[in-house]
Image (tube, rainbow, N blue to C red; front, top):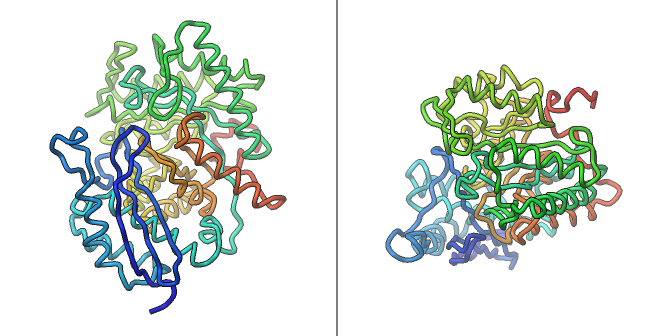
Length: 434
C-alpha cells in the first residue's frame, strides 16, 4: 500500500441549483489526502451522453438519487479501495467496466462522474498542488476566455424564447479579471434596459435575465444595446455567442420556432442563422442544428464556419470518437466539454484532446443544474481549454467558478496569460488579423 492508495469512498445526497438531489463523492487516501466532487445535471441533454441514475417514484418528482449514492458507498467503494489514485485512467476504466451498461445508466453517470472527479481532487491534494497545476504539470497554460450568459432561454426558461443562451465574450480584454469587469457592466446595462421597457421578470436556470421578448431578434437587438450602453464596441471589444440548442425544437430536419411562429427546414434554419451573422456581432454559435441533422451541421459549417465558431454539444456529447468523426466530416470547428456527458475525467480529457488535435476551439462547460463545485474551473485552466462557459453573471453556483478562475489568475501573477482572441478559431476573429 502506498500513500496514494484509496482507503475510503463515500457518497452522499446533496442539492443542486434547481433544488434537485444530486450526488457528492468523497475519496480518502491512505496518507490522509482527501478529494470531493459533486455531479451536475443538464436540462438540455444529448441522447448519447452518460445517463444519470434517478430513483423514480413520488419523492422529489422521481429525481431522488439514493440508489446512485448507495452505488458510490457500496459497489464503487468496493471496486476502488486499494487502487492508486494517481492511476486516473485505470480507475475510470474500472468504473466503466463495473457499470457494464455502455451508458453508465446502471451505477449512474452522476455516481461515476462525482467519483471520478473526487479521485482527481484526492490525487492533486496528495501532490500538494492546486488541481489546475496538478493537471498542467510543466506545460504552459492560459486563463480561459469566459462565455457568459446575459439572457437565458430555451429549456432553461420554459421555452420563452427558442434560443437557449444569449451570451457575451470579451476577447479584447487584457485579463480574465477585466473580462469579468466588462461583463458585469453589460449585465447591469441589460437589466436596466429590460426594467425600463417593463420586461424585467427574473432570471432563468443559469442566472441570465428571463427573456420577455416578442422575438429572438429582439433579444439580439437588446444585447447589442446593452453592450453599447455599458460603453463597449460590439464586435470589436465585445462579441455575441449563441447556444441555439436546436435539438430542443428540431427533429428530422424540421425546426419549429415557437416564438417566431414559423417552421423551417435545415436550409431555412441555416439561412436564418446566416442573416443573424450578417446583422449582429456573433462570433460563436453552439448546436445550430439538431443532433440528428448531421448533413445540416456539415452544410452550416461549410457556409459559415469561416466566419464563426461552430460548437458541437448535443451532437458530440464530449465523446472523442464523435469529435474525430466531426473533424473528418468538417461538420464543426469547436467542441463543448462537459465531464458529466462523458462520465469520467479520462473520457472528458480524451474528447478535449481530440478537439485540439483537429484544430477545434475547446470550451469547458458547466450544466444548468450546478453546485458550488469548482472542478471545471481547474480543468479549463489545467487543460488549457482556452474557453470557459458556466452560465450567467449571477447566482453563486456560477460565480463560484468565475471567482475560482480569478484566484488562479492571481496565483499565476505575471505569468498569467489570458486566452482572449487566441481561443477562437481564426474565422471567428472576424478578420481583425489577430
